[in-house]
Length: 227
Image (cartoon, rainbow, N blue to C red):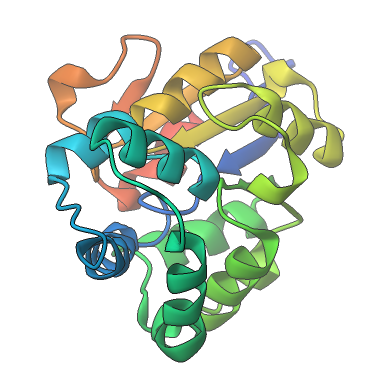
């Protein structure tokens, strides 16, 4: 976007927004925690919210499995099969019940109408992202989706954000990442892209100083416009 300054010249600001999905646009963390708890309990593993938030939030499923079985010294044999069966029987329909946070739809529409390029960069799969965005009627605002299945390493590795920027065709300096998790903030920093962090998953005091904290989704548009 170009803004006309008081001096009578145009000044550049952000032109593209790269959103994380789970915990940033949609309130899906309780949904996934419930599924993993149900399946993992069959393997004698009972993890805490604190463990998930500090060790697993923002990671790919494969990394989550590796981390949790290593920490709890359990065997992962049969877990993926059990999890896939659970998703097959229940999650494919239940996932449509996941809703956006308050203010997200209006904010996405405003960004779209103002001419911003919008991408979603998620550790989840493209198929999952498409399903959630469609179910919440915001898919039409998103130009590119980059899923965890497209990268070898995910957050805090910066690759997923760098790939999203490349797909949008926008310079790093003209992009901003919107995240909710510490791993995502670290990934944005390593990608050298400015970052905003929503207070949906982390405590304010735990968010790295690199990110600018935004308390409500209804505030995002104005914050981005003034960057």
